[in-house]
Image 1 (tube, helix red, strand yellow):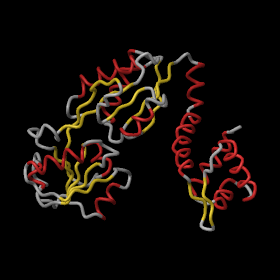
Image 2 (cartoon, helix red, strand yellow):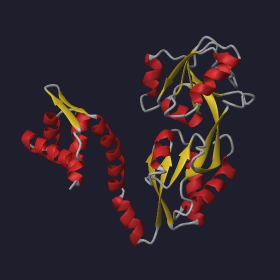
Image 3 (tube, one colour):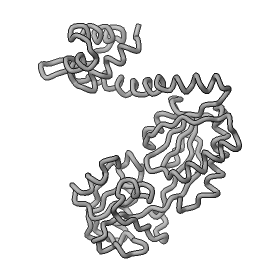
Amino acid sequence: MVELRHLEYFRTVAELGSIAKAATALHLTQPTLSRQIAQLERALGHQLFSRSARGAALTPAGEGLRAHVGTIFVQVDRIPEVLQAAERAERLVRLGIPPGLPHRWFETFRAALAESAPAVKLSLQEATTEEQRHLLPAGLVDLGLMRLEPPELHSALVLLQRFGCAVRDSSRLAERRTVTLRDLEGLRVLAHSAQDNPGEEVRLRASAEAENVHVTWLFRRFSEHSSLIAETSAADAVLLGETSARRHFPTWRWIPLDPSDEANALVRTWAVWADENRPGVRECLAAMAVAADGAGESA
């Protein structure tokens, strides 16, 4: 029988890549932890680690379990919220949110939800669009906010954001009111990877090629280290929304893309769900519609 503690032991070994290091972190002896991992492997019928003098490397089965275990512990961590909501006769909606979501829009949505459906409470999980496409069908989130409209799920457009370019004050673009892709000619430009914003890389490359604009593209995941990535890769400009620019590049100047570039000037966010009968989902969608009416493109 698989117990939660066995999965915790597995996760720790997988993260540290060593049974010895994991045993120290878990305050267990190495032989004890080795026995626990062996018990887990016997219970599951699969070898999870390939052991060697260099450490413990995940097997293909182990890689699969690591991906699955992450979602299990997310659900375990939510147990206090679930119990509190049940005691108060509240409906808990697990909401996936992408990086860069404007706080102003979210607060408008939350205020509308509190007014129209005070019994609905939110439990947030930050996840990229691609991560949410797996979480929703698995029932690990009830409602997601995504940067694309997945055909396999229900969706509604809820937010339009201006997309723009962050540059240093010394940039030749710093005094521009708007920027076009042609203005990026010859520059090194950092942009979202496919994980953060699916379709962006293909769209930007195609747009630049269509206009015969030569750009050195640097596609990366945006994180707390985005400014370091921009500096070490010698990026001249960064393409992102205003909210993300304020967070990651507070000393750079953000300039919106020219609205004539319809394909790239706006970032679209869809509310996405698998089961519209899930308690609280319809109420959230109605509140998001209210927020969308009041936010506009500048959100």
